[in-house]
Length: 332
Image 1 (tube, rainbow, N blue to C red):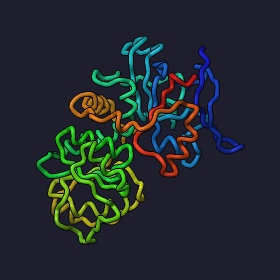
Image 2: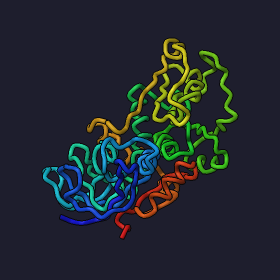
Image 3: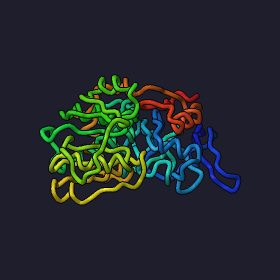
Image 4: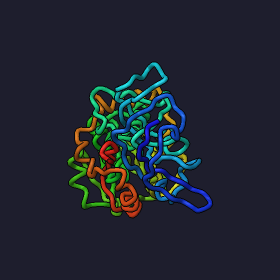
């Protein structure tokens, strides 16, 4: 047994509590691959779980962190050996099993990804669930014949982590990207990541018609609600709208017209439960022809486990920008 520090989340008769604790490897949830964690990242879901403001965990206690990257210490699965660099995102981390906010994590071999050549452990966590989600959206769109010739892809919530990585990934893949955000002071930054046009969501007027003049070849929507309702009538024939977030609400109004007249496809992006073969393909692309060119610009902050509570509060208050990387191996 090895004793180590972990950001552990509890909920019991005394209520919610979370913070650094010293535990040992025997306390970790079962799995075939024991990893010494080097990096994790901070996602909105992590902030909800860590503060108790969202019911993310399905049982308690668990270590937080839906992303993890590090080196294998021990494995009962022959695919992995000591010293291998690996990563894992979603797959039950910080929901049904201990996550990446700890100096050690025990992973399910089915969802443990060998670090692809072309990515460092740190880069894989700048990407993390956010980058995986953005790339998965593009993969789904391309499976439905999305092509640059259809026109620009609109990225809503473009100032967020998923949005910034989507701009970089999609422009790298050859698409024109129109960034939609209410944070106009970030427009120059978004252009530097590859956005060819930035649109203030406050000034984006939707006609309310079932269909309007086609403006976008497709979209990655982080917002939902009225934004999704307004986007659908603006998509060209046979374009795709991939939905990956609900920052603007879980409900939206629409008609069948974009779908039955223009053949628009509405695609769901659920990154946490993605099948293994698709995971492998997404990470292969992220390490190769879809690798963002501006990862260091998108990673705006690096913290240790000690700084997680303050980071969560700032994120939930809207006072965060870009991606936050957690340097787990520098905790002590």
